[in-house]
Image (cartoon, rainbow, N blue to C red):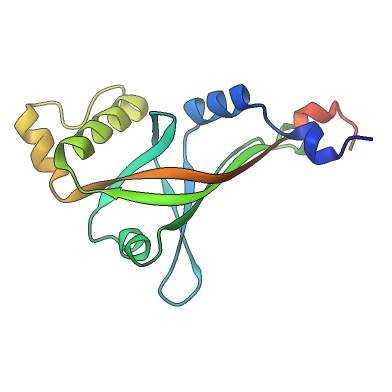
Length: 154
């Protein structure tokens, strides 16, 4: 008999669609006191990897500079039979390139607001990005679930 884990696992195509359509990503890094540092982030998928931007001096960046291990989770659903989620455990790559960061910021702006941020000029975009960095997550392990696949049998 197949395991329930195998029954509810998202296929590669389902994972890709779920990540593309997802909204708020829970991001955990290893905090300075040994506790997980957990924050909610807006993100995009680019080159098959999760990307987000944040201020270069933020706690999550300080944490990731010390230890690049990162875990992110995307979830949806309210009722048990609707619960769907995906966790990526990986290595965070901090990209300290202003143009790259501005590009990620513009794509995040398009996804969440329907417009790039900022829209005035390329110079304004670079100025806004100059205090930020992009984080690209290189997956090491991915696990997922979709309780809807159980067909009401739990």
